[in-house]
Image 1 (tube, rainbow, N blue to C red):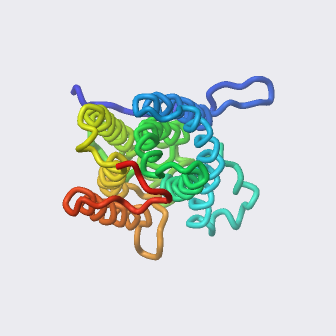
Image 2: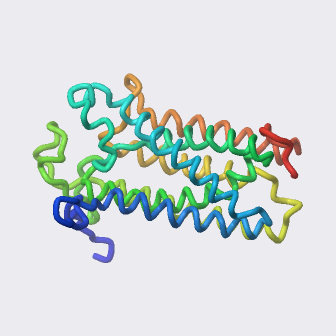
Image 3: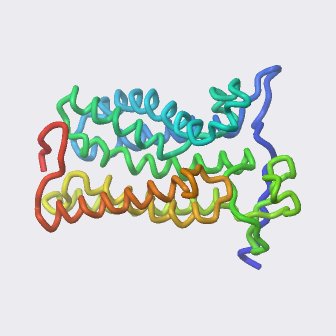
Length: 277
């Protein structure tokens, strides 16, 4: 069958140089950051915004987003990390949450925008396409780590998980939904949508409002994440509820209201400085 794929990770190690191991997870995250900064700087030029500003913002985002993503993950997996606190900082082993990165990155962007007297929504419009592309790349780190997979499946496309990585209740199952692939493809589609809106906006500047690209990202990404999270068996939980689904629904609701506010009521979004809309 054309759609018959059997995925199996070759392992988390990309290559080794003496005692130093280069892991796929770290390599993919670093690549996503580099590609993302380059892309956002290109988009800034097209919007007549100083690309050096994006380079400075990237430092803020890295400092804020990665620790926030890790902290978010550790908080909701505290029972596990309380037993091995030495792994709390071992981010190269996997275990970051994009919603934590979004929270930390957004707060950092707000402070940066305030200090530089620029609309935070203008900055987010330049950053979120790169974020979506970076997520599409970074999800393959989950593949190499054999983590963040879905429920058992016998579909033609499936992911083999070694016994050491299977939850105890699924030890008798070999194949699982490749949710890393689902989300990677979804994020790539979101990226293409955002890029289309961006370039459409260059020709229709008076019709594309500041903040639209960021809001569309929050809605589009969250729709896919809500569905995909329903397939996963390793979700971060808040009591009986899947945290990622709760956050996704909140983002969809708030962003949809904001889009109505901007286009139906023709009002500007709240900002750290007045936008040039």
